[in-house]
Length: 56
Image (cartoon, rainbow, N blue to C red; front, top):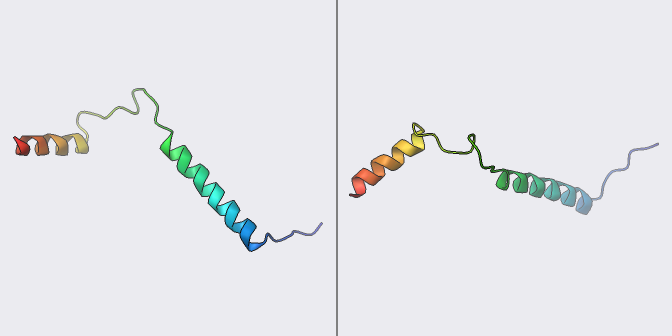
């Protein structure tokens, strides 16, 4: 059986839908638990502490 090539519109839709699924998975994959909580010695936490001290 020969492999048929998708038309341009179908190739575009396939790519776009794959990227949309990927973006949705990344956006909604936050779970409550020990792995998603921010660590106290995280660089972002340190930066926020410095900014809070400067804002006073």
